[in-house]
Image (tube, rainbow, N blue to C red):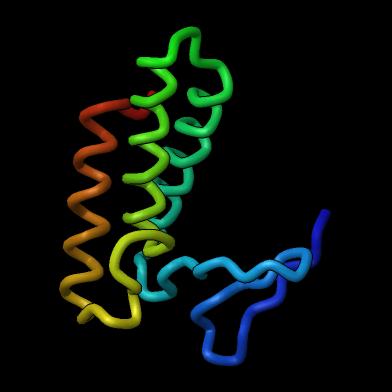
Length: 102
């Protein structure tokens, strides 16, 4: 397994020398867990999609999950706590509608 380092400001993780935006640390544990579950299922759907249309739909789900986690879209550190919570809740609602949990 690769070693993950976090920058001093906590905004980025570094994996194999490459910098990636870190997950929003203010997310409630249950919301972050659900978003990660959606992300994993969406990535699997991208990998296993039988058609381009289904692959694109799965990629859209990946995007929603990563936005909810704060890894894409507006940088989480530039948003208020309320805006961050609202974004996570909105993305979770969309993901639950597109791919209901089992």
